[in-house]
Image 1 (tube, helix red, strand yellow):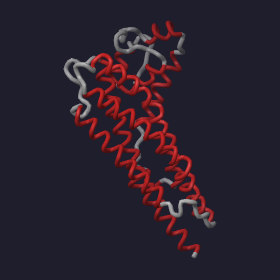
Image 2 (cartoon, rainbow, N blue to C red):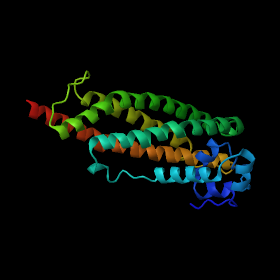
Image 3 (tube, rainbow, N blue to C red):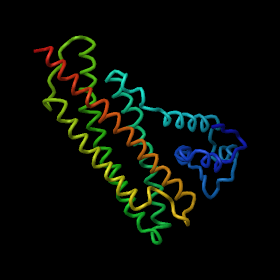
Image 4 (cartoon, rainbow, N blue to C red):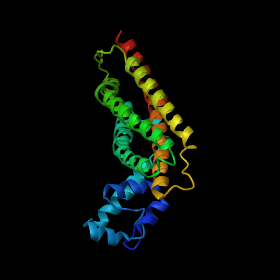
Length: 244
């Protein structure tokens, strides 16, 4: 995406709605005042134009990352990727979507009561994911990294307090199922996050962000359920067998 001083902020979001997250972070109204140029809003808010453009470019590049090659990564690299890309994504994007949904409930809730269901479900998702990710970062991922280190150094690993890696893995997979079902419920009441005919630009942006959040969650879960977890279980068994 080319971001020039004369380009309007509304056109930036129109080209790629993900840029809305950065504009919102800077307090830039791209909806009602979307016809203003980048130069104008940056001058009015004392924002560095180059920094704004860099943040948008970085976000779009980061979000475009794929997990297609993750099967070849060392386990500790895979854990680092999930934590730095997908965990940080949830932490950064979740509060922004919550703000949008709260506004939609105030403005459109009377005509579209399903917004309150979506708002409640998403707020629950953000809370559940915060707890889920903390468990991974403090318990599961450190052990996964230790397994990878033991494999490279040919040194035995210390048996964790949770017995075997399969125990926290099973807990995390149960959480994944719960969040997948939560998004299915949200999609069911919103026609797969399709904004209604009377929805404003904020409505469309919020639903686009929800779609993207769901897509990132799917990739996040794929990397763990289908790649990281099976490999960690297999590696733990292999190292235990060698030690015995």
